[in-house]
Amino acid sequence: MTKRLFSAIALALICLSALCGCPESEKQGPDDLAEARSALGKRNFLEAEKAFERYLRANPEGEDRWHVWQNLVELSLNVRGDRKGAIELLEAMLVEYDGVPEKRRVTRIRLAEQYRLSRKYDRAMNLWTAVTADGEASSAAKADAYRNMAEVYLRRLEFELAKEALGLCLKSQVVDPVRGQCLYDLAQTYLGMEDPDNAVAGLRSVLELKNIPDSLRTLTIFMLADTLDQQGKSAEALGLFESIRTSYANPKVVEKRIEALIRQKKKAPAPAPVAPTRR
Image (cartoon, rainbow, N blue to C red; front, side, top):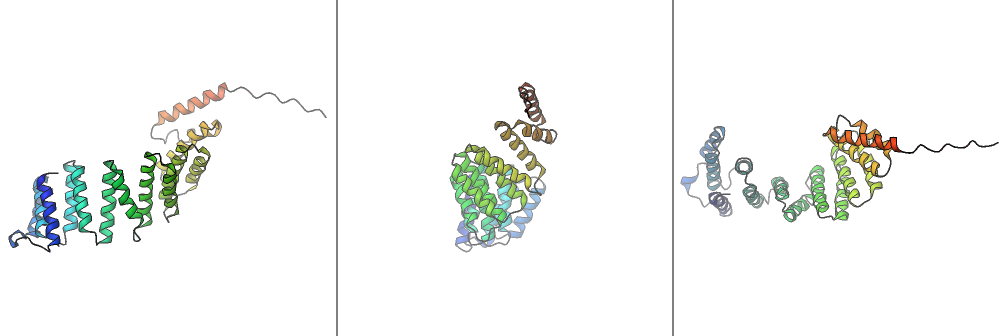
């Protein structure tokens, strides 16, 4: 982020706390917005950024501030490729909208994602925890936060904490696609804990859900087939791999697993004949 942009953020927050200490000559909100939008249309992103910053300086209580902040974050992420700068902007937004629950929640979620992508997991975890404690947050938002927290716990090999977070996800009143993702993640956690039986049970639960994306169903079948194969249940594993022969993202991987299981089946010794029983 440029020093100029840091200065703009600082000035915007100072103006807000002082209830507009900016000179009257700077109060050109509508003109600044019109100029910013025109510059965006012409892909003149630097001029758009300058105009948005002027609006923030001149209008500490402006009704368009939320959208202006959002535009600055988008410019930082998608034009500058500056995630650190976007994080600074979102942190400033979190201060400004601390008393506005809905906007604070949206900002927390977006900021947590940027910290996750930056591998600043401690700060991300704090933000997700705040989302789960938010009484007005939707079940879907809380479930997503729990899933993200579980992912971090898994990275740290803290399996019990991951299992706890995903258990809370499953207790939320969520639709099948979200429940399926939570169950899938929980199955991965059990595999990390070397508990394939519970992993298989969880994967079968995913497949029992009716309204899940085809992509999740395919991934679940692959993981289930792989786990069953490792348990020596090759016949069921083969059938599952064959069912996703064309739908799996990398068909060659599935083909190799099928070929390996068929070779294994051919090499298996024939069962010994059963002697007839005498009457």
